[in-house]
Amino acid sequence: MYETILVATDGSEPANKAVERALALASHHGAVVHVLSVVDTGRYGEPALSTSEIVVDDLEDFAHDHLADIGEQAAALDVELVTECCHGEPHETIVEYAEEIDADLTLLGRHGSSRTGHHIGSVADRVITHSNRPVQLV
Image (cartoon, rainbow, N blue to C red; front, side):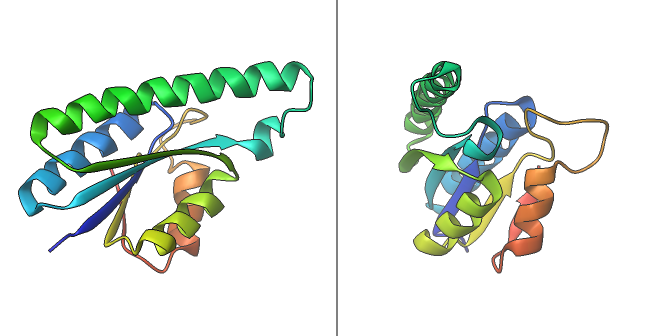
């Protein structure tokens, strides 16, 4: 049923649950999982020799470490994994990446690192609104 699954992560607990779900689905269906981590340049800007450069560098380091951890999880399940860390507006980047890889399913945590209350996070809401592909919130 699924050949290509995209899961976006910011390292939050809801995103980690989406990663777990993506790996389980991929293991069951023999699908490839693409894990995308987007450094939010709308929030932090592109670094230009300023304190924002330190913040962005820290976010990139965190993302790469997190993607490496997910790689270990995927290897334990014998799931083929592709990881990508990039800069951009998260919702736009996720939607564009899903189109680029022809994702059968995009999985997202209900809330991200900037969540408030029990509402759907703004990134998840925007991906659902702008994507022409199936999106599942975990």
